[in-house]
Length: 148
Image 1 (cartoon, rainbow, N blue to C red):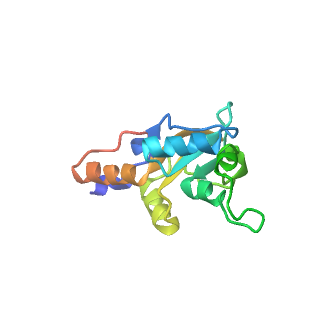
Image 2 (cartoon, one colour):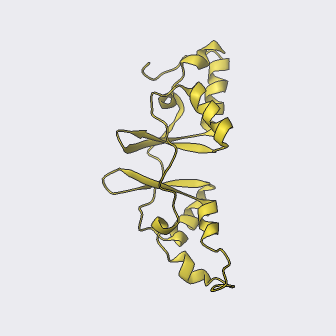
């Protein structure tokens, strides 16, 4: 189990994650959530720069009932761009960050995943399942594979 202390995000992260652009519609995002059973998607510019994160909760927030919209118009709301509801101040991790630290961040924040960013560019995503896989690998004696 001591091997886990050497594990870094790059040892377990998912590379080439599914992303959306800031102009993607909420309908596009909801379709990806339904198809892939994701809870969140990084929002990335064409340049590769991550500009936000959209979650299922963000999509639900778009349907808040207000005095002006007691019955929010579904089609109109789902046509809105992700940039209207996404979080812009997003907790991220780096590829070389110790997995022990990520595990603690997940416990502290209750986040299910973190975007992995290197020099402003999204390079992967690390989720709870990835951390659990790292723990399982370390328990079986498998050494970390990434650079230390």
